[in-house]
Length: 154
Image (cartoon, rainbow, N blue to C red; front, side, top):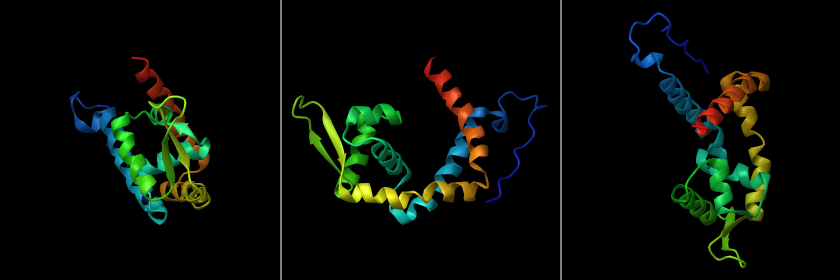
């Protein structure tokens, strides 16, 4: 995939020029990443948000909905429909906690656990599509994580 060079806006007299906005650069990169992930996830029949949920559950099964919300920075109203669709597909179950019925526990099914093996190819597909080494991706990811942490502290 060939990525166009960004326009040089360093000398732009217009502080509101679209191409000079960090927010637009992040937004456009987000759209491009979603397109790449859509292709990489087609074989798994997962959307990108569903993939993120599965990543969290593959790291630690049997989580509360609130834990998944926190990890993915989503609210319950956004996460619940994702979980319902994954449950309908037979990849996970949702069950009220016996000790506190306000909490819902999310557990992978055998199908959900086995899907992890197929998903192991996704990072390689992303590296290939972006034409970046894992080191290059880390060099992009780490400053974005730091930026997000600064924004979260606001």
